Length: 332
Image (cartoon, rainbow, N blue to C red; front, side, top):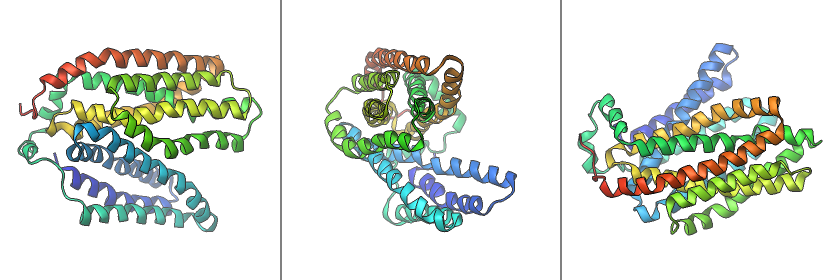
């Protein structure tokens, strides 16, 4: 509705304000408001970037483009904790100010270096009422089903940050060992994402994301057998490969499904599925672990991953028919 560039600018210039407020806040209410605002405006750019990639990149190259974007995000995520630790030793406020400045710097890059990517053919529908645009989702059951399946994928994925540290602790492994095991995730993402994205561009979309779900399930299922750090690290490596494949293919499928004028909305719904997974996953995983134990959690993840894979495969044929029948632009 607003365009890709204005939404990105809103995200990158408003987030720093609340980030500095958060660094200065001492009152619980102000901390809560600032934290919520930082989370909201930080993630505001994601659907816009997803739509912009779909605007700029032809379908056959989108998987590589989304993979590169994911790789860049994780490269930054690997560097950030080191810098944050150094800054926090001096003053925590420096950490918040630095975060605000780097976010604003991204905004200036967009402001002066990136043009609006929304196709001209979609511009005339930008004033369509939001209710009417949302109502078009009723005619997009594949999008909703894919996002729902991805929600369950995300719930399983979050167990690496909920159930895994608890299980490792029960085996006498502390935070340092957990940090070493989970570091395999970041290392593989940085090392493997670009070559995998290049190869995956030639693979069928839904079959690839189904394999990703199987790898996710197998990785967490293998955790049930882990007793020491090397085995836990191997389990992380297995589900990380599934994560890499899914995060390249998922946004690509959404871009393939979405009409030009609804790309931002489609990417937003897909992103919301991941956001909801990060809310549900810790609650569900913690409950299963507390009431049924670690093995039940990991076996449940294995079964869920396999079921997710079959669900993705079941969507493949309807999605291909939808893509073949879709018009370039939805105007009604």
